[in-house]
Length: 309
Image (cartoon, rainbow, N blue to C red; front, top):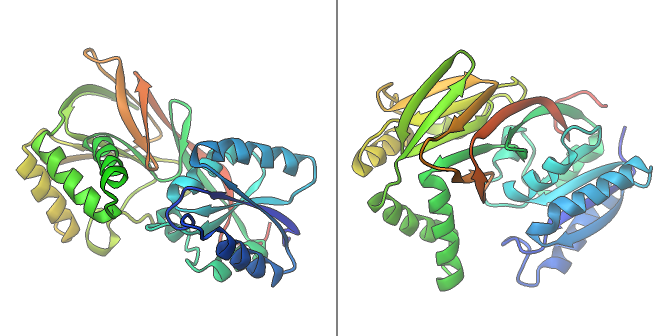
């Protein structure tokens, strides 16, 4: 079934659509949907208001005013809207407008506006998993340790100096490696409990590739599992060498990284009550314990290569 009326939610502060580019993007989107005789409503909202906008759109679908909800932006924008729709029957349309677009790429959604809208118009729907940490939904991954500090420092540098994201990230990485955080934590999952002292714990929604061209990519989004990666305690130099070996496609030794597949896990600490947590690029201080779980098939999304709903 081709949707006839779709609302498109966009992050008004995203780099791809700020600087006065709203009108141009509006014209592109409306033209793309008009080709398929789909009526559209475009709503620009600040990033902090996207989830509320998605919840309002969800209610409009339930009242029969809309057929579907689409999100235009990067992974953070898509994740905010997906978090509101997860667990409902409302289908999410993905229009990738970000820098990396991990979720869209893993779903094989084209990166051009016209082609992404064509996927929505096809009416082909699939159900995919989402992850959740203390009630916050993520479509890609969540992490604690060095990465949340990298993101905070990167954004601080971008605001204060106007640096590009890659340059700001590189400078933030150098600083983080000089002050590498090591967390004493307790990880509990199905059938095992283990204390650890780690600079980075990464939890992915399904299994992530860890080498070469497959680095950061997922073959499936419907296995109903979380992938847990725990970096062993090591120096900043050793952690940098681990990252470089991974990018170059070399096998990761078990002594450097513990890898597990779980459906739920809990992270706690005897020394801390709160931790800085990243999920899909958002950063939040969360109370311990951190309770992670996979929600299999919780999100319905327009995606190519699937049967029409």
